[in-house]
Image 1 (cartoon, rainbow, N blue to C red):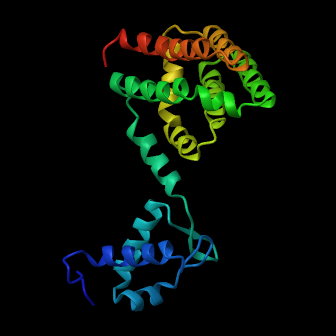
Image 2 (cartoon, rainbow, N blue to C red):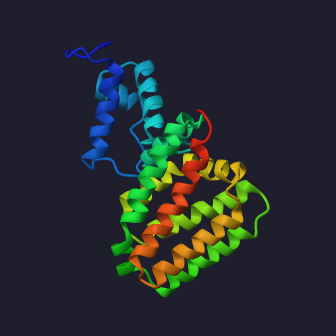
Length: 231
């Protein structure tokens, strides 16, 4: 058996590539069991050790999951895999991460006014207000931060853009850490509540200038507090 394919790539890469190809072409779908280890060895002319290493890599990719009694099954946890990697990579919250994250959120939330006005419903407005009330009821910064994130995730979800929703989900760990850090540093829950109320009032009233000003002020206040200290 070959340890390396003719082009110079490893035998593990060959097996990984073969399974990804089957998945991407639709020959294997989410929920389908993978061929047995022996079948994969024969299919790819690879050793058992090579196939097992390839399976380990595919699990990291979020494409394969090993289930009791079923064996290896095709799944689609690719976004979850990226999410977990992103969570690990933001263990240390730097000033630059804070500024970059808040800057991205300003682009989305301040810039989304027209679409928000077009798509928002009375039920959306009511839900935003309910989340804001729930946030105010918490005594701990971590619990309040979860509802703070829910508020902004709900606001963004009204845009109806699944890619942006996924990006916010991906960024949730660092956004939560920013929110909690800001509360601890002095921007208390009461201030957040008041600012959220102003944002919802402006959206409900279709007031572009007030909405964009209030969102920018809300995000900018946290940025300024964080920037007062070093990394």
